[in-house]
Image (tube, rainbow, N blue to C red; front, side):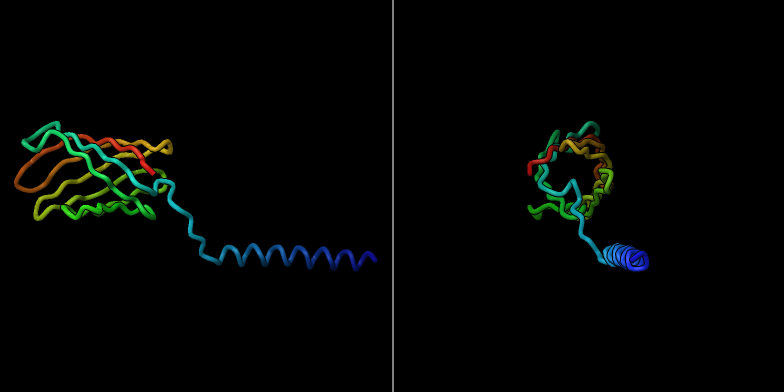
Length: 128
């Protein structure tokens, strides 16, 4: 009886270890907590650019995109909410950095590159 219990216990332990190893091998898709639709307010603090803009930006799997097509966003939100992006419109562009929080808000700064030099701040609010 004792051998049977030892063998059963060893088999259960082996099965549990194998199941854990198999689960570790499988690729599990974990959604980025910052995924969703965001309303972004961009404010110019220095330079001749328009005073303020508001855009709807979509984040999916940590990648930012703009559905309007007027400009191209190449950006990423890391697992801790750090934002790094480049926004391009023709040959003009802007570098964006900042932070999103778990509460659905964020902020940061931006600065343009190209012929017209501007800089400022941005604020974000998650919409869904």
